[in-house]
Image (cartoon, rainbow, N blue to C red; front, side, top):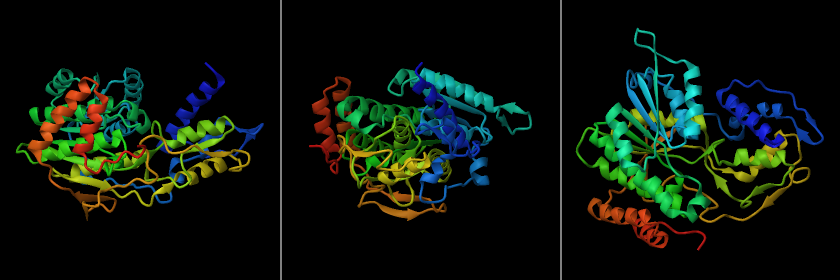
Length: 406
């Protein structure tokens, strides 16, 4: 293993400590223009946000999960894993971790079991942690999991999310983000799940890429199910980028600073809405409790942040001068990327909720019959990996979709 690989293994552990608030501040020190790994403990993710971190947990929220069975898809991912961590501090009876990454699940199961969280039911019983290696695209496998565990709540966080990668593989984005959501949601109805919470993205709003367009179609499907009779309540949560998640700019910039620069940014004016991983997960859980079915909850993430400002702040925190000791290079927008993202459509009307950071978007009702017919065709194209056919159909299904790189 290379020295750099060892460094980054330590970095990942330190960043986890920072998220948990357990890492003590460290004095700045460096050697030969390269800062020590220990210095990263002084870099708190929250310090990169131009606002106070959102902290909220009500008695009603906690009691709503009393003795419940919760299933989380994408449980080894950034958001899914944090949802699981927070839920394991609630009085749930069982949590089912579903992910196709066996290595991620192996590590995460060990972490959760080391927490030793006990159910507050008078019997001093440990939370039952169940691990299922499975793809949300596998209908029979997902059906077996739902039938076996009969979850009360489902948090659907599994998704492909990397914009430039999915531009090259639209069929994969469709099969995971659309078909996977359809399979999970249909099984929720079939097995009588109480609440199904879909984790969406601001990239679903006026999408300019395949990833965002597939998340938009998944949102429409969830809303179409909300109009059906049945006991399952479907709720959508929508928010922007998550600082420190896999593929986010912070780990990338840290790697580039470790290598002596330059830090690469797509465009000098590019902005994004940001939250920390705990913030986003906390609000998803709160939205689950307040939702009654059919809502699209949009998180108030504050003002958008310039990526250039984040880069400069990280360079300064590392003890260097931006643009001099560590250079900054603009490489141009990648396929499918925007300069600015949006959290809601112009046609959507935002309404307040009892939580100041959660708004409810009033969305248009889809033409269910027409949409379902198009959806069936889209999935058929994706299963045969007819990329061009799938792309053309998506453009008709999402009228506001405009490919930024064409």
